[in-house]
Length: 96
Image (tube, rainbow, N blue to C red; front, side, top):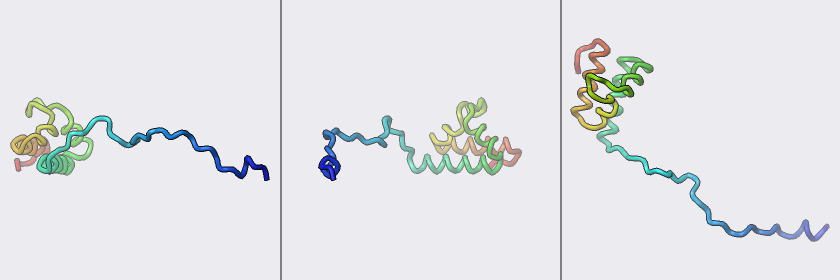
């Protein structure tokens, strides 16, 4: 055998490793209460309005609520209750 094939390969110069999975911008974390409210209105809208209508309603600006329903529900309990009432009204049901 040739000596060049049996010798160990040359090592590359050491380069600093960077974390490839590091997030460039830290995400805002919601409180457990905010997550619960978001889940609550999402499930209610999904069940009463159906998938596509629920997504459209929760993500579009509402003149009645003066804001985006999903943002209002996450922001406060009062906002969440207002969004729940709007969903029920939109679905033609009695308010919760």
